[in-house]
Image 1 (spheres, protein in one colour):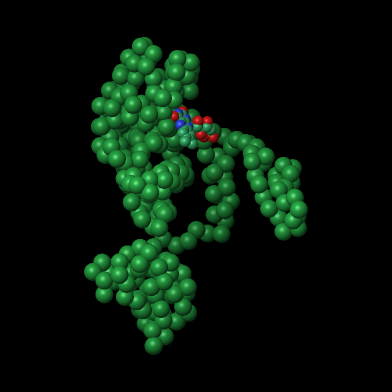
Image 2 (image 1 turned 90 degrees about the horizontal axis):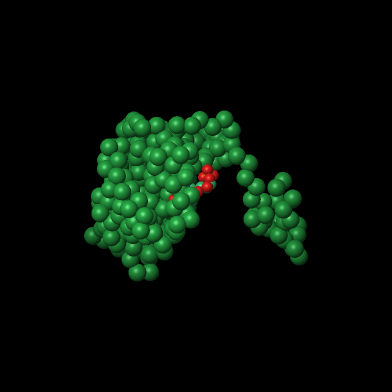
Length: 305
Ligand SMILES: Cc1cc2nc3c(=O)[nH]c(=O)nc-3n(C[C@H](O)[C@H](O)[C@H](O)COP(=O)(O)O)c2cc1C
């Protein structure tokens, strides 16, 4: 047995029906049916490509709840969503929008804990699970970071010094927006909490780290919205914290060699919306069908069907 192998893979033989689904779902191909017909885990060198991917698919797939791994018991897993979930998910996605006005109130910490717990299931390349989440869940702490960053940013703007993405024009537009949509805060939109997915960026895995973080950001936004919170994904404040107000950036406590481009502001939304928007991106859908072999890109009208 390899030194890293401590999977604690266990099969309850009283429950197992020897269906082999665990074998067929095992990404690392380390489960096989033994001579007695029950699943067993092969010896392997190390976690990852040379062994178990730690994905827990074996525990999740078993219709009998007969498999435990890493001391996780199947009865402690959440059950799959009901079939009507597609309708809810569709509504969630269509109704999700960026929130730029928040109530000045901390979100119930249990809700944040629940969201973060679910977030641990967000996919990562090779199931590396290396993405870290930094959450500033106290509004007064956010305010401290905000004040330091905002004052520096505003001072620099007076000298026409901006982040690489900004200019006199963009900054003046943002200043105007403080009177309406951003409520006195062009930087964090007054969000009482911040969420940042970040991962150590190393050599050839740098691009993967960025993708992992961006996926985590998206998962966070959707689940936070599902729990009734407002969210705003922002790249501008992270530019400010990394280029202009580095003292404030350090207050986040994220190491310099971590990818940290997107900051999600979240909190209870100030504005309730009554319906979804109706964005039309059909011209961006390139869909291939079986029946059309010559010109298989569907014209816009058909893609909308
Ligand atoms: C990568 C990314 C960066 C963004 N950065 C900012 C930002 O810095 N400030 C901001 O107010 N909105 C930011 N947004 C929000 C977009 O402006 C917003 O998604 C877009 O206007 C569409 O509005 P909706 O999200 O309500 O559909 C960002 C969104 C994404 C995906």
